Image (cartoon, rainbow, N blue to C red; front, side, top):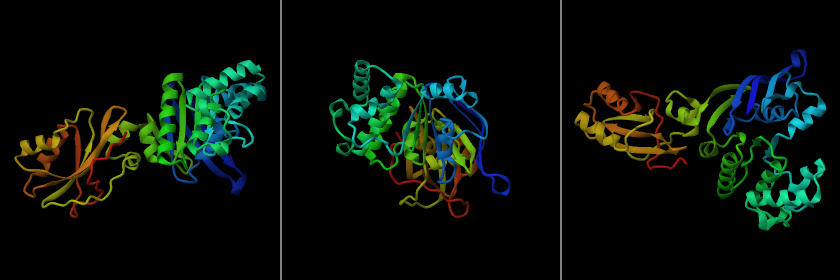
Length: 343
C-alpha cells in the first residue's frame, strides 16, 4: 500500500518560493493500480521523485507498506527503498550490458551470490517474456522489449510496490498493449500496488482501477475509473472517454445519453422507444467494458413532439443519464458514429 498524506513540495524561499505539490492526499491499496494524470507542469515528475524520497518532501508523509519513509534515517531509507520498484519513460538500460546483465545489477550491488543472481535473472526474464533475449544488448531490442527489461530489473529485489512514471510514453500501440498486459499480470501474480503516472488517457482505461487528476500541484478529482466514467459531471471521466463529433443527423431534438448505472440493458434504446411510443435514432456511440463494467455514452435523436421530462424519466429508470445537446440546449459534446471498445 502507498499512502501520501498532505504531501507538499516547494522550491525556493520568500517571494521566489514555488509550490509544486500542494497538500496531496492519495492512497493506492494493496493489489491496486492507481493512475495519476495531468498536463505538463502539473507536478507528476516531482510526485514520482517524492514517492521514492529522491526528492524529500517539504512537509507531509510518504507511507509504503506501513512504513513512513519521510521519517527514516539514511540507512533505513535505503532498505525501505528496496520495497519500491521504479520504471521510467527512459528504460535506463546500460548500453554495454546485456538484458540479463542489466536485470542483474541491483542483485550484484546487494551482494547476492552469482548462483542466486543467475536463478533470479532467469526467472525475471521468463516472467516478462524475454528469456530468449537474455544475451541481447539494448540496441538489439525493440522499445517495448527494453521497457520490459526495465520492469524485470525493477522487480529484482522483490518490491511490494511499483512506480511507473510515463512507462508507456513513446511506445507504439502494440508495445504499449504488451506493457499494459504485463503490468496487470504482475499485479495479479505478485500482489503489487502500482502507481502509474501518465498523460495517456487510453492507457489509463486499459490498466488502472482508479485515477486521480493532478493540476497545478493539487489533486482536483479522483475515484474509481468506472465511477468516474459513470458520473456525467466528472471532467476526468469525460477526458478518459471523450466525446467526438458524429457524422449522422436526424430530425427532432438531440440528446446525449451516458451510462450512469451498473445494470443498463443492452436494448435500452428499443425499450425507451416502446415506453414513449416513438422511434429513437442512434446517431453515434462509444460503448464498451472497463473491468467487466459497461460504460460509455451515445447520441440519440428524439422526435420533437416527445415530452422531455418523460424521456429523462424513462432513461433514468434504465440507469442512464440524459441531457439535451442540440443548438437550443448547449453544450454540444457529441460522440462517434461507430461503437468503440474501451477495454
